[in-house]
Every structure is written in structure tokens, then in C-alpha cells.
Length: 200
Image 1 (cartoon, rainbow, N blue to C red):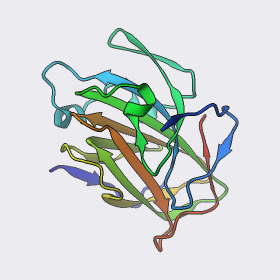
Image 2 (spheres, one colour):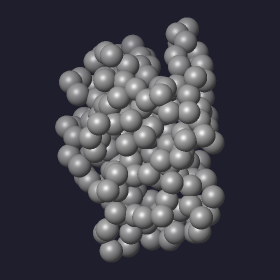
Image 3 (cartoon, rainbow, N blue to C red):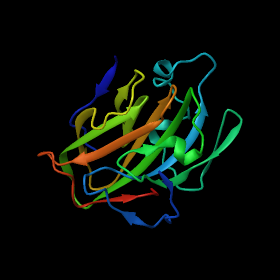
Image 4 (cartoon, helix red, strand yellow):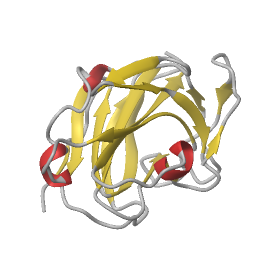
């Protein structure tokens, strides 16, 4: 098992929301609004445990998409879509109407803060392998196949004043293809006074 969560960094349904819409996390702190891009086939013979440490898209740590942006990967054109998860996890298979195996997908969200917020607890889960970039920094990776267990890992980050960018990559080995993330304050209560945006 390989897992990394760097602590103390400074720094599903298709949705018709416009780029200017400002949203909120759920009452339990889960982020339900994402931009997603999938499916991206892994290299021939490559496992998810190998692929999670490689880029499936150039400069994936610094992705800043908006809905409708096009991306050509492996000779296939994909389009970034807004989704709103119907529950506390998002489902790539529902968003792209397929449940392939040995594929990667990206979910991006923008968190806006009026002030800096230190010691924010980021609780995450993925099915299967997952990787998170926070404001361009690689802060988390899970490299084993697994089912989704909410709040599987937790780490602390600092949300900077202004826009914070979260890129969540998840690889599907087989079966379900899901991810979940919520933000909590230092006492473990759902974080308040933040906004979610679906454009940079």
C-alpha cells in the first residue's frame, strides 16, 4: 500500500450551471460540484497502481478547465463537463455513461475563500486509485485498488484567500469508479464560508 498526504500546505448528474454560478458544499461538507473529464484509457498492459504515478494528461497538476473545454488524448477528443453529484460522492461512470476498465478520469473544482483558512481538514476517498493536486502541488496519492470508503484518509491544508484549485484524478481498475472529498474545520465540523466555482 502506498499512500501520501502532505500536511500543512499553504497555499452524479450532468449540470446545466453556467460558469458564473457560485455554489456551496453540502451541509456535511462534501463537495458535490465538479468539472470532469473521462474516460482516458491506460497504456496497454499498465495497471492502475503504475498509472497513478504517471500523467495521463500533460501538466495535470496545473489543470484549470471550464465546461466545454476540449482535450485530445490518445487521438480521442474529450470535453470537460459540469456535474452535480446526487450524493456525497461523485461517479465517473454516471457522468460519461460508461463503466470501462483500466481508465482514468479527472475531477476539478475551485474553492473560493474571502480570507485565508489554515488547518482545514481534507477528507478523501477513491475507487480505485486516487491522486490529488492542491493549488498545483502534489499532496496525495493512493496506489492500491479498493472500494469506496468515505473519509478514508484525512490531511490538513491551508486554503488561501481567493481561488484554490483542486485536481482529483481517479483510476478505475474494474467495477465502480467513484470519488469523494469534503472539507472540515480544525474541530471536524463541515467548513463554512467557502464558495465553489466551476471556472477559474
